[in-house]
Length: 114
Ligand code: 5GP
Ligand code: ZN
Image 1 (cartoon, helix red, strand yellow):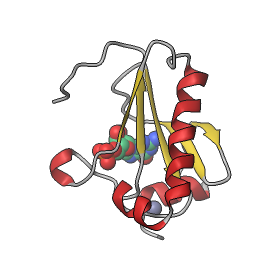
Image 2 (image 1 turned 45 degrees about the horizontal axis):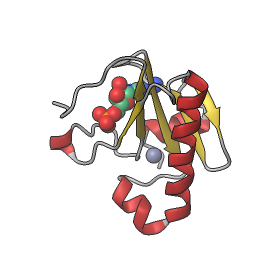
Image 3 (image 1 turned 45 degrees about the vertical axis):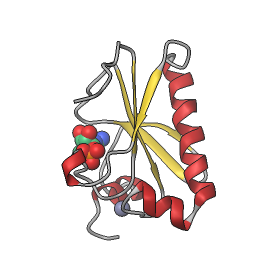
C-alpha cells in the first residue's frame, strides 16, 4: 500500500529504529513509548487488522507472535513479563491500519488496561 505509514517503514522510505527482522516481519521501537520496552512488530505485507491477517495467513500471524516473544527475550523482559497488544478498530485505539503487535514491558502493567 503506497499510502501506509508502516508499509513505508518496511520499504525504508520512513526511518525507524529497527530492533529485529525476520523473513516475514519487522520489529521497531514505537515513536511514543508507553513503557521502557515498547516495540511494534509488523508483517512486511499489508494486512489492516490481526483478524484479517489470521484469516489470510495464519502462519505469518504465528511468525509475528514468535517474533514478539524474541523481542521480549532480546529486551530482557521475557522472564519478568510482557504484554502483546493488537488494538483493533478505532474505539480500541487503533490509529495505523497495518496490523502491529505492541510488545510492552519493563514496568508493572495494570490490568485491566484503560
Ligand atoms: P495503534 O494506536 O494503531 O495501536 O498504534 C500505533 C502506534 O504507532 C502508536 O503507538 C504510535 O506511537 C506509533 N507510531 C505512529 N507513527 C509512528 C512512526 O512514524 N514511527 C514509529 N516508530 N512509531 C509510530
Ligand atoms: Zn501497510
